[in-house]
Image (cartoon, rainbow, N blue to C red; front, side, top):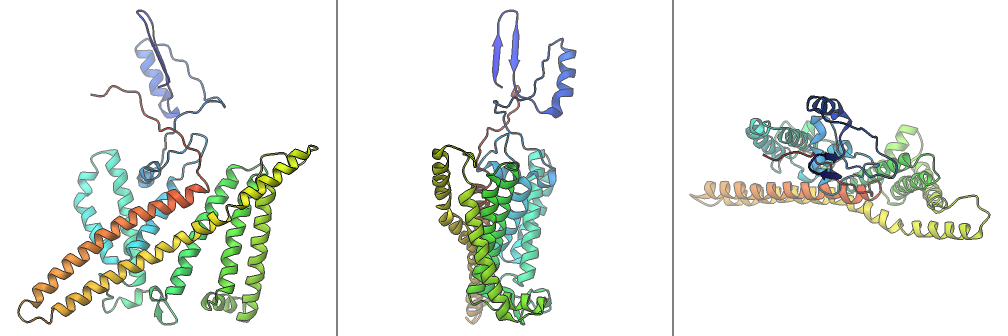
Length: 385
């Protein structure tokens, strides 16, 4: 609602309306002998934002608007939020049995949550979290902190060892996920700025991130990624390492150069010296975000750290229960109490951590590079009964 005028003989209402409602709105006005004037939004206007997505992913809309309502002229990150939030949540939970517990809770509440559209949307988001948590838990082989006999073959392994037990590789995977997430964020910004030189600045940040990841792998001393590429390319590991180091350095340098040259709104070709000076100033100011993007990338290490903490807590409670079993008489009862209480606490902490940090990586790190324009949510004009 933008304007409401009422007198003894005239009642006028000016408001925003979704395009999908115009037909029914015209029918209503004709039926009630009312005049209707439809105008498209002008360039200087700022209409409210109405996110519209399929029910399967619409539950993630609440996760987006919890932090920010995208401006009408911006873009809808619901699809990306849906998948990335589910992946981050699963990595933090890090246990297939906890995912099954969530699935059981969802199954009990399934019919009740399907009574209205809002409940059905949230139910779909919960289903994605459950499926992602179970799949990731099976991949790392964790079921209440243990791997049952016969299920080891479903674990992801490297050099005969479960991947999750190789901390260096898991940290690298977490960083790689962070880099790809932030690269996607900057490429989306570049696409929205297409046709302007500013788009090349966002492409520069994407190149800097990729170059930094490649260079970091090359100089970190990590042998497994280098060995993979060397084997697939039929080259020696040392030549691959040197090539990655050189390529990563070129990626960083060319990316930062693009950021410096194309982060200003002033004309590139100008006869005024002030424009050239201010372009250099804007470029240097943009380069100060190097520390920001570096910190944002390292922030994704929480995916591994929190997942490791959850797994270690589960193992610890299992060990305490095993020790309690040795107590004569009441050992089984003590062990059951420790298991129920311990895994219950770990489950609750995992859910809280998965929600808080899963949202944080999307709403803080990701949105900071792709969604900075805030709008107002669309609210239908209606009579509340």
